[in-house]
Length: 370
Image 1 (cartoon, rainbow, N blue to C red):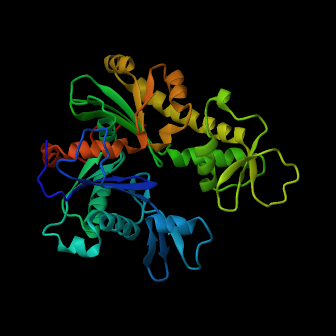
Image 2 (image 1 turned 90 degrees about the vertical axis):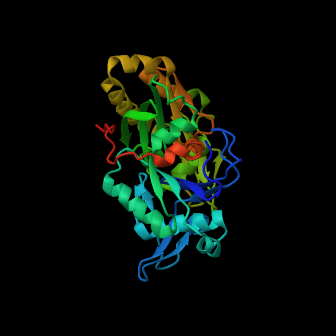
Image 3 (image 1 turned 180 degrees about the vertical axis):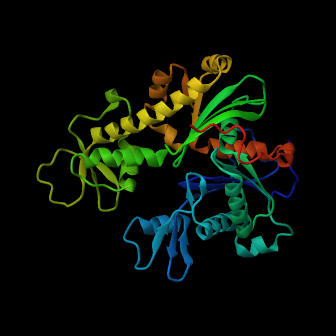
C-alpha cells in the first residue's frame, strides 16, 4: 500500500471555504482515522487589487483582513465556488501558499528534482472542462501530475465505509458549498446527486430568518451564530427570549432582551437561527428524498439497513442527523471528525499505489442531478 519513498506526494481537499493539503509521508500513515502531522489548513479567501490585477493576500492573512474594513481598492474574491474554480489567479495563489507552507517556501519548491504529484477532489457536477481548469490551476501553482478523485468517494473512504465490497453503502457529504450524496459499491460510485445546499445555504437561510424581524446581518455573522447557537432540536434551545449580539470584534455572545439597544450592533433571537436552519433543512430533505425514491428497490432496501453516513463540516449542525433520519425513515449517523473525512480518504487512497493508475472520467457517468 506504500507509495514511493520521496514523501513529496500530496493530497488536496479543495473546499469552498477551506483548502486542506497534506503530504503523504511513507511510514507515518496509521489508517483512515489519522490525518497525520503534515496537514495544512488555509481559509479559501483571497484579496485582490483589480486595478493592478494582482493578489495581495491569501489564506489566514486575507481572512483576518476581511473581518474588518477592506483597504481602498481591494476586493475579496473567493477562489472556489461550490467546489469548482471561480477565479483562476486567486486559486493559483492559494494553492501556491499551501505548497510553500508544506514544503518549506519558494526556494524549497524550486529545488525539487521533480514537481510533486497530487490527488485532489472534484464534486459530482464537474465537467471535463472544470477538471481541466483545476488541473491548470494546480500546475501553475507548482504541482506536476494531478489526479481527480470524486469528493464523495474520498469522504466515504475517510468515514471508514467498506466501499470496496459488492454491498452498496450511502454517504452524504455536506460542505460549505454543496451537499452531495452517493451510493458506492465495488470501490466506485454507482449513482450520485449534488446540490448547492451546503453551509453557505444554511447561512443565507439564517440571514433571511433574521431579516423578517427587520434586522440585517451578514452571512459571516450568520455563520458565527450558526456555529455557536444553531440547532434543529427545539428542546435544546437556550432560554426563550434570549438574544445574540455581535460584538465589535465580530464574536457573538448571549445577552438578555434589551429594548433600548443603543450600541448600533445587531441583536436577534436565538430561535431565529433555529428557524433559518429548519427552513434550509426542509429543502435539503426534499432533494435527498427525491434521490432516495429514484434508487431501485433492491439497492434502497440494502442501504436502508446500513443507513446513511454524514460527512463534511456543515453536517455537524446539532440535530441535523436526527432530522434527516426522521424525514427519510432510515438510520443516519455522523462520521467521526466529519470535516476531515475527505482529506482522510484522500490520504488512504494516496497510500495505495493502484490509486495513481486510475482515472475517473469527467463528466462522471454516475452523476444524477435532478
